[in-house]
Length: 115
Image (cartoon, rainbow, N blue to C red):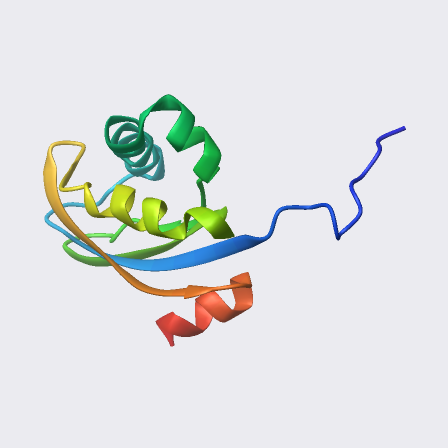
């Protein structure tokens, strides 16, 4: 039997909506690898693990142009997560520019930034 934590004991989460400009299509795996690499180089092992970043949704700019995505993190480490996102300038050999559009407490709220 799996024991679940009570809602009052769970960590609160924030969802960061971002947009990305790229020269070429970007694979989800490559972007996730660069996000982890940026977090580790900027924050170190313990800092990156405290952020608990995970890439929830990702559209890798099919063709040239814009892509978007949503990253989940712990609510107390939102600024560190934004800084790690800002370090991404190249993914899979193609240049990218990543900009955080907004922060939300729910995935539904984060999706509203794309409308």
